[in-house]
Length: 178
Image 1 (cartoon, rainbow, N blue to C red):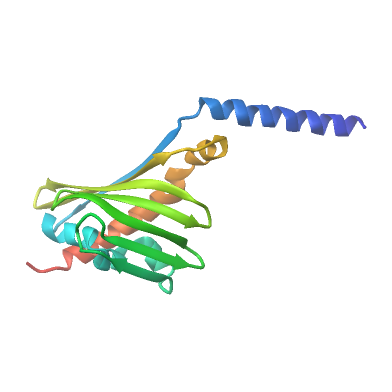
Image 2 (tube, rainbow, N blue to C red):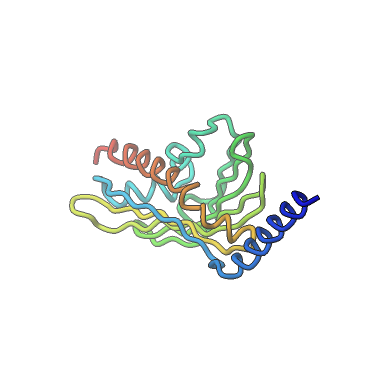
């Protein structure tokens, strides 16, 4: 009986830490990675803002190349959409919301399965020596205590995917001869 009381007390303390700690955590998250690419901003931009090209370098398409992908709308324009459905990558949709050609692409990202969530993704292109610096950022809001705790792990969960994707974007963009 004494062991049961100790276990209950430990669980109660952990629950208090979880909920009170959650109140102190930020209600937003942001993950960002950058890479320098020796290619013109127009080439890099087309590889990002044209989802037919995006599909060729994005790390999740490489993770599950058999996922069903649908690309619709006018490329590199608001409303251009990339939807996917796979066993490993789940399902969701990305939709361009705003563009400044060769500079910025804003995308609304909506995950449907295995969990519902929405984020904003942004690609910023700036001159860098003889090429282009690309900064890929994903940010969003945390909807509850559990998502606040999860946000602490976001950088570790998707940061490596961003790095892999930027490396593939670099290889694809630098292979284009102008």
